[in-house]
Length: 216
Image 1 (tube, one colour):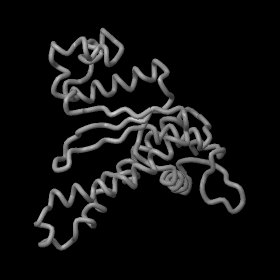
Image 2 (cartoon, one colour; image 1 turned 30 degrees about the horizontal axis):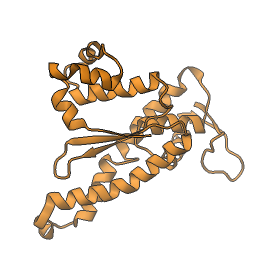
Image 3 (cartoon, rainbow, N blue to C red; image 1 turned 60 degrees about the horizontal axis):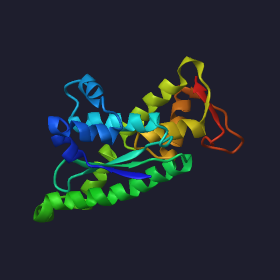
Image 4 (tube, rainbow, N blue to C red; image 1 turned 90 degrees about the horizontal axis):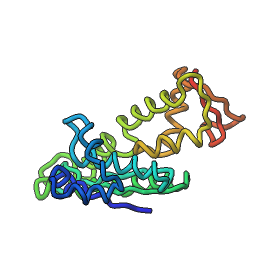
């Protein structure tokens, strides 16, 4: 299931009294306003509705996993929509993040070229190079998302929990734009730093789905 969540219209209209019933139908929750008002004031309308929708779909068992991609306006650093995948398949979550990385590269290249326009001819670095820098700063598997993944892994493994890599990876990939290959390398680095513990077969270099992971 693919759902296109139109962030801009929802952000504009969610606070209007006239759309209360419509949003209640959308969320299958006529009392949605109480949860909406419970969010901190700094949280935008669309982020509130988005989180409520994701929570509602999980509660109603629409699917087990809901990874999503944020799509920005072509010439502005502003969210236009969010593309959500609802699936019961762990493999589809993995493929979703793999595809996101390749699509993201092209998206960032196009957005950078549109923003620069004719000015890019006078720049030291071409638009493609600047787009690559942008992806490393905020794209799939970037340092920000690796740090977020490390924090999430620590939360899952706290209190002596032992979890296989397959379950760990799908939990993290659902919530954070990161690929399975990034998580494997992250865990190898964390083991070398003495943060996590896992054992590998002879000649194996990275965790497999059945590799048991725990905090060191």
